[in-house]
Structures are given as C-alpha cells and as structure tokens.
Image (cartoon, rainbow, N blue to C red; front, side):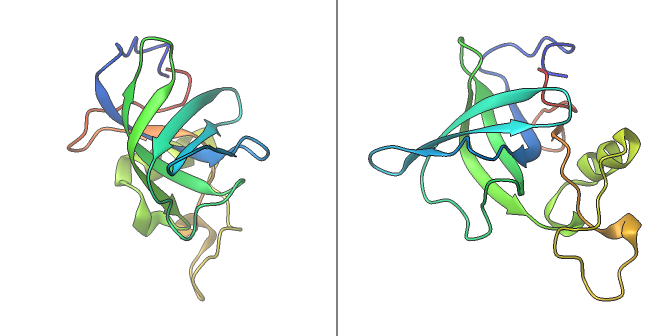
Length: 136
C-alpha cells in the first residue's frame, strides 16, 4: 500500500509484517538490514540499534520510521510481535481483512484463532501516520 498511497520519502509511518527468511544482514555498530513482507510485496528496512529478543526471520515485526528517497524504510524503532497485544488495533483488523491472521505465533492458552497473531505486512496510523500494506 506504500505505492498505492504514494507515501513520500521522509513521512513517518508504522510498518508491520513478517521478516523475510534469509533477508537479515548484520553490519557494523549494530546496523542491520532485513525485508518486511506480506503475501504480495516486500520492503527493505534499515535499522541501527539493539533488536528485541523476539526478533527473528519469519516472525512478525512492527517498525516505525520513514522511507528514504531510494525506497528503503529507515526504522528508528523495531518491535517484535507475537500476538495482537503487540500491534495496533488497525494493524490486527487489516491482517484479519486480508486473511493473514494465523494461529501459530505463540498463542496464549485458551485464546481463539481470531485473537492469535498474524504475519501479513501492514502499516498502521495511530500517533505515527501510516497505511496498510507493504507495497508503499
């Protein structure tokens, strides 16, 4: 949805999705790059800092930042997610709408499939302007 909504470089938004397996590359001084994807598109992400303990390839992630002029998402915050309590309501709703809501991300005992985590790439608005999807 990045392309669909014509997000201009420098505009902050929140991006959510799955860290693509094999895309994580570590550099010097805590620099990392990886790709966040949904079922149809992926977006490269650069981040410098300590990644959360739950951060893994194939796992859900929420990042805050902005696109640079080359189309790379420059994140200044990265959060790993494993259920809906770690993502904004609009991201969870968008994942459900897109059919990407899955029940295999460390669901809480007794939780229904509708309340378990998902892996589609989505960006949300909230206090940081955002849009749904990775194809920005």
